[in-house]
Length: 117
Image (cartoon, rainbow, N blue to C red; front, top):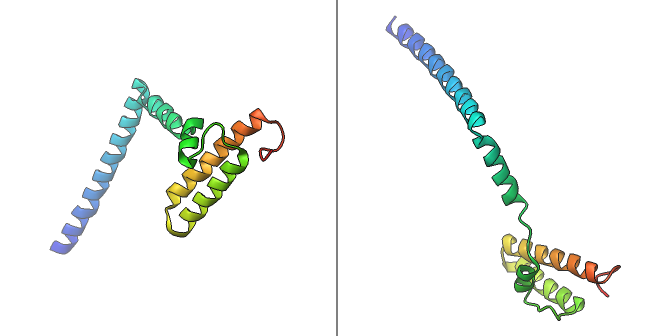
């Protein structure tokens, strides 16, 4: 008899607790939309996500100068990419790849057509 009462109390208590949490969450969403916190958070996330690599940063990652030819950049890229593929980190490897992509777009703007020219 006591176990049945205790089980009923636990079930009812957890139901009340869950309903209260749902109401609190809904109220928090309403408050956030009224104050503009939701839009500000979304805008900050978009800004952080769209941060592109600069040409200077790309040159520093690959260790090349503005006078470097595309062949020299490709050679540095291949060396660094392979080195990080075998015993480096995926993060560094992706940075090297993004640096090459950035410089590739710069070289394509300067020389229409193939960046390897």
